[in-house]
Image 1 (spheres, one colour):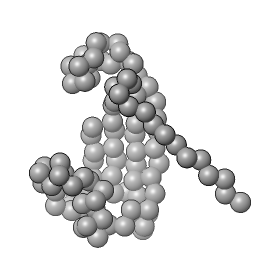
Image 2 (cartoon, rainbow, N blue to C red):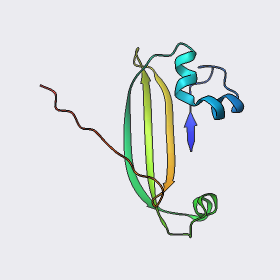
Image 3 (cartoon, rainbow, N blue to C red):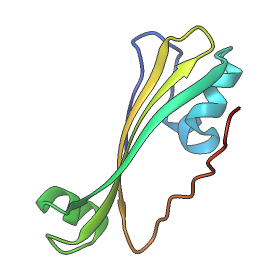
Amino acid sequence: LRNHLPLGLLPLATEELEATGLYRLMRTGGITLHSARQTVGACAADDRQARALSEPVGAPLLTMERTTYDDTGRVVEFGSHVYRADRYAFEFQLLVRA
């Protein structure tokens, strides 16, 4: 998992992230999350990904990239994630707007 935040958005410590989670820390820090754009895909594991995920090189992986915005339209996070296909699933709810 790789998450990128704007410099100076809020103070973060590894211990807090592991115990609390990024979005909860953002809300606690006064950031009102509004929306996100997310892209889901797939790739074949390269050497680095295979080692990190205990998979063979070439194994199918799920990918996800997300850009998250606050209530002013400011980008507050960009995430690029890779998951083992046998241990993760994405679920979507699609709503029809009139």
